[in-house]
Amino acid sequence: DTEVTQTPKHLVMGMTNKKSLKCEQHMGHRAMYWYKQKAKKPPELMFVYSYEKLSINESVPSRFSPECPNSSLLNLHLHALQPEDSALYLCASSQGDRRYGYTFGSGTRLTVV
Amino acid sequence: AQSVTQPDIHITVSEGASLELRCNYSYGATPYLFWYVQSPGQGLQLLLKYFSGDTLVQGIKGFEAEFKRSQSSFNLRKPSVHWSDAAEYFCAVGAGQAGTALIFGKGTTLSVSS
Image 1 (cartoon, chains in turn orange, green):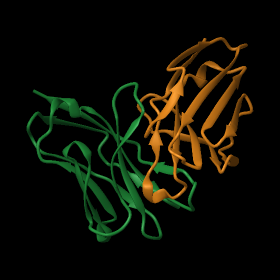
Image 2 (tube, helix red, strand yellow):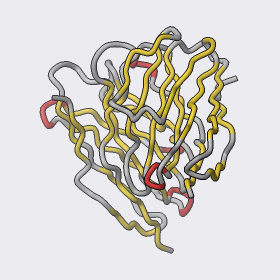
Image 3 (cartoon, chains in turn purple, blue):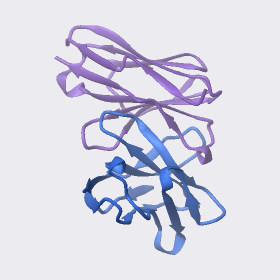
């Protein structure tokens, strides 16, 4: 298995809703990442988990809450989002050594209404 | 600070013509460099990577890239473009220690005309 699987692929939520994005990989990668990507822009880093511990939080608002239950799973819990949070949310994983690159999932397209 | 510059925002190439996408980086040590491609609404697919050794790197889908330390460049090339190559292309550098994130350029949109 050489993939990163993200669910759901599409999500529409109201500003008062609570939802979660899920990311799963079975490549034995020990670092996992959440990126946010707006249209026609490069991905922007949100969080990094290394060996299941949060190692980087790029000053992301608290309405985004990451969770790494085990080495294969990464969640992003969403609460009280704003319309400007609408974007493609990408999960990635890596072996922890940047030489090997990063494997990205196909993303969750989030629309906040 | 580390950075990646992709000078061309949008490039249009005729089908069958050759392609070169430019990438310049700023990094203090030997960089780990990557090219990713993204089709509309999709995730990023790794085309190729460089971290040491032969400066001409072969990737998937017929792409190659050449690392030139003297020019701080890592340009992506393809000898004959296919309509299916139309997409967004991102150059990225792996900076810092293991487990730290990629730094992306702003991307180049490739259009292919028939």
